[in-house]
Amino acid sequence: MKDLSGGQTKCLLVQTKFSGFSFWNYRDVCLMVGAKYPAAPLGLLTVAALLPQHWTFQLIDENVEPLLDEHIKWADIVCSGGMLPQQKNILGLIRRVHDLGRTIVVGGPDPTSQPDVYHEADFLVLGEGEVTIPMFLNDLKNGIASGRYVSTEKSDMLSVGVPRYDLIRFRDYLMIGLQFLRGCPFNCEFCDVIELYGRVPRFKSNQQVIKELQSLYDLGYRGHIDIVDDNFIGNKKKAKDLLREIKIWTQKHRYPFYFSTESSINLADDDELLQLMRDVDFRYVFLGIETPEDAVLENNKKTQNVDVSIEEAVMKLLSYGIVSNGGFIIGFDHEGSQIAGKMIDSIRQSGICLAMVSLLYALPNTQLTRRLASDGRLFPQASRSVSDSDIDQTTGGLNFITLIPRTVILKNFIQVIDTIYEPSNYYKRVVFTGLHIRPQYKYSPDLKTWLNYLRSFLRVCRKAGFNSATGYYYWKMFFTLIFRNPKGIETAINMAAMYIHFRKQKEFGISATNKAIKELEKTGEDAFYARMMGNGPGKEQ
Ligand code: B12
Ligand code: SF4
Image (tube, rainbow, N blue to C red):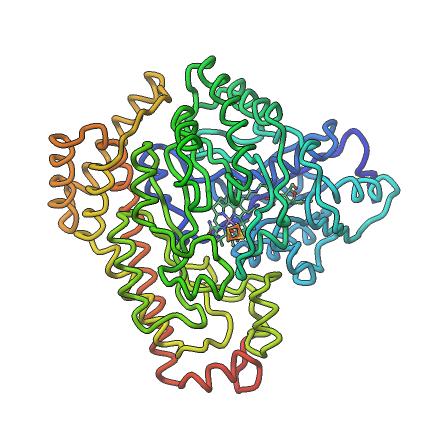
């Protein structure tokens, strides 16, 4: 085997494709602003920074360009990894790399949660790269040709370097990720984040974050930064300290960025924190709401959301110029028979436009998965990404025997997405958001970006405004806001643009779910479960 640890090593990083039908793959919106995919592959950019810096790197993101055999042949070593929905493509990549006689290293969340699935990879570098990549490099130096590296130790975030942002073309993406912390103090039963990254949040220093902002700035990036923390306010004091530092830096650099993040809903209780977020131009926050039923939240140990008014929280954030996106889940064990109606009401009353409604998915390596397995309810192939419908949790959930009849859950799911993504209902929420938002945006795009915005605006007008299903609502929204809150128009147009994707996504979700219901009704749920559990004819492989 060639000495791969030497100075001449060529390393190819490959981000494999996500499904074009994923809720998260809003390509139409990307194309409108000249990008190709929403989010850059931050995991691989971080990995590149952990590998020897005298290596030569090339990154191919299959979501923005095709991976050619020439790319693989160029490399001495290929690195890939990622999430469950990428599993099939990562496995395909392993075989392709081997067919071309190259070595492949695999890591990231899905390989970490279920390493045996990826046993064909030469090197499995699991857990946090900061801990396991040095072990792998040590073996590589000693000429060892394969291995599996695991560590229960969590990385010291203070030693994490600046991701190799130079390996991507910024224009390919709508936003660039930046990580401040790993882990979350809460204990939701269905969550894999606390298993992968722990319940004690670990933080980068403020200086590290500023260095990453500076690196992006120096590389010429301007625009949207997504702080990919699972819960940005996992420690409110640390979040505030960081925001104060960012405020000084961003003022000095004339606000080159605006931000989004994920947070627990108690963000709404803290005006000081919200003010600091407004000061640095936070525009979107993703809230894990999950369900409007308090008893279900308690059952799932998501107690921090119990007794919280979603409407008040969303309104409070809007008053600070921040739009809430929300995650909702259907299919919990003890959800009530009125769940669909309650969820629709919750989404309607809160005015959340971007509501990601998923079917409960027992992710590998969670308390939920362990409970379902011990109750004999988990499908043996629960987290093998085998079929084309394993796209994300909006269509590929319920990988276990449900307590409530499966068809009931699927029908509830259809009812919710059909209603909330019906044009008049969606646009009501857009108008609500546009009327109540009080933005004080700071980011000031340059002339070229302004012209690009203008082009995008005209494209949205054409696609949404001159469309038989949405045209009436679009222009009604537009003129309502022009007269009543013109400051809300930018946000509202962004939401209208997103709807171009959501409408398609809704149709896709409904048709896939209807197909599943038909099959269930044909065979009966017992026969379906017998097959899925491996006890019946034609079991799934
Ligand atoms: C931001 C984010 C997203 C974004 C952007 C994703 C993107 N394209 O980058 C969006 C919102 C689109 C998204 C969507 C989804 N996500 Co997501 N997402 C995250 C989040 C919060 C941060 C990811 C990140 O950038 N982390 C920072 C980097 C530095 O960490 P990292 O990628 O883990 O990399 C480290 C190690 O894993 C390792 N490593 C990673 N890759 C490799 C490769 C090699 C070769 C090596 C050696 C090491 C290595 O080294 C790195 C440094 O330590 C994570 C949770 C988390 N805390 O990581 C979830 C997470 C990755 N998502 C997850 C899931 C399930 C999804 C969805 C399927 C459903 C959902 N939750 O919405 C969808 C599907 C996506 C799709 N397009 O179809 C799960 C994955 C579980 C699994 N077993 O695969 C996670 C872990 C948590 C969660 N439940 O949400 N996601
Ligand atoms: S709040 Fe979010 S990240 Fe934290 S444990 Fe719950 S689901 Fe996981």
